[in-house]
Image 1: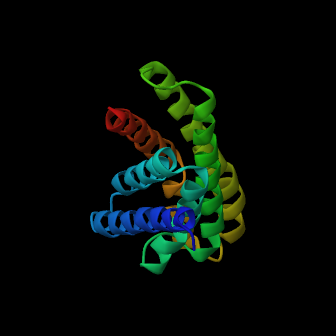
Image 2 (image 1 turned 135 degrees about the horizontal axis):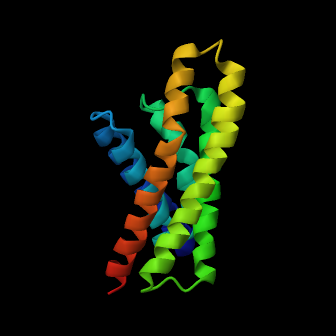
Length: 173
């Protein structure tokens, strides 16, 4: 394995390790706002520091790792969460086309758009499509899933992405 591949695998490993540690630590507080914001922060930071592919791999793995460690909703929902994370990261990737550096209003506007897209995806595919199909099979989880993937996703994606862009600007200095 050459140096470039080793660096690539190392970056994925580092961000997944940070992600799992944050999920484990914040899960104890049962605060989806805290956990979700930090997870989104990690996803965006992984993109800003390591590139699109690293961030998409971390984002795709995130819900499955959370479930393996005893957190998160039913396994049936996890592919939707992975896809939502990948879409979110891809949209954040579009920030490269806009010079967001040192333009706070552009950063805020862009983060709002990306967060709305992620929350909208979750709303339509999880709340409107998934929950009605499985409400009879998983009545208790359906209520939890509906609350987790509604307005909360918009807020956590917005907080996480804003923090990541602001922190990355400070790291550049």
